[in-house]
Image (cartoon, rainbow, N blue to C red; front, top):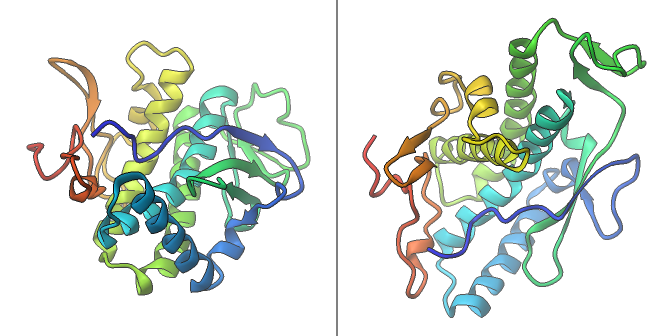
Length: 246
């Protein structure tokens, strides 16, 4: 497969207002209407791009693309600032692209964050200081898992997938975002934050980090399938659970 299921977000802003044309995650999860409309738009995009829109593929893309929002926000701020934002659905917002309906712009709203004692903003009213990086990693896991649980509750009734598959995709989103933040920040192997946050399995997440060194370089084994192989002329992705041994 040549196209990635989670393209890079174009903007990550710390702000108090929702981006123009955007939506708070709490509103997106407030009922089935937005999610169903998004899935319909996504199916239309798949049809234009590939000539087919298998329902399972559209479903899988929506799950991965939504969960990339809290995962990306948490991973990037952890890596670059050693901070964790609240990640509550009311304090994250995103805007879908006009063509490809991917969350292109992401806004972290509000002033609450967790940080280390050495953080220059540790005395700010919204700051909660934790004693070390392991404690900060635990906060990120907890905040992300709480947001993912809200998504699973909202989307499970209209999804073609069971809850185990939804949580597998949530695990992939967090592990991939942490690995990507490391690589974007110049960590040679790109595994430091992924192994810090996902050093073991923390249910309902379905595995520890699966980033590993293979013969062709660093890679990761996916916990969930994106069903891109159902698209014309596409095959299984690298690390696909359908083809990758555990």
